[in-house]
Image 1 (cartoon, helix red, strand yellow):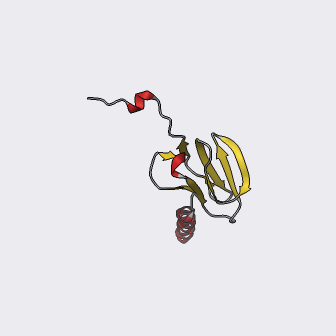
Image 2: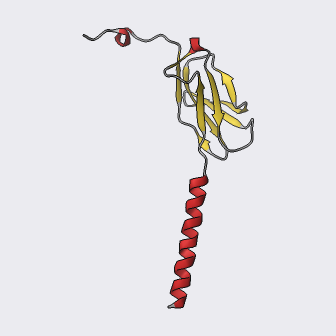
Image 3: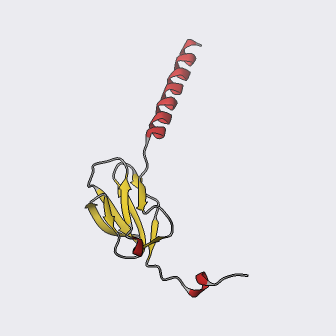
Length: 112
């Protein structure tokens, strides 16, 4: 019976340690400045990648394709597209779409 108690204690300690490890994990975030949406080129949009890992070791993706590797943590956007960044220790960010501001007529239509 004592052996079962020790085993249960070890299992509980292992689960607790794993939970702490997951709770402490930081995910990669892509910050947009100015902070409103939609992000539009004429607003001079700056993207900043934040996450754990070495500064300057950011991998950038544009429209789902590798766009720059081990580049700076931030840059000013000059082309419309969907951007994602990655840091080795914390994974990929959520995508951010930057528009050139040319929306179709259907988006400008006023609905009565």
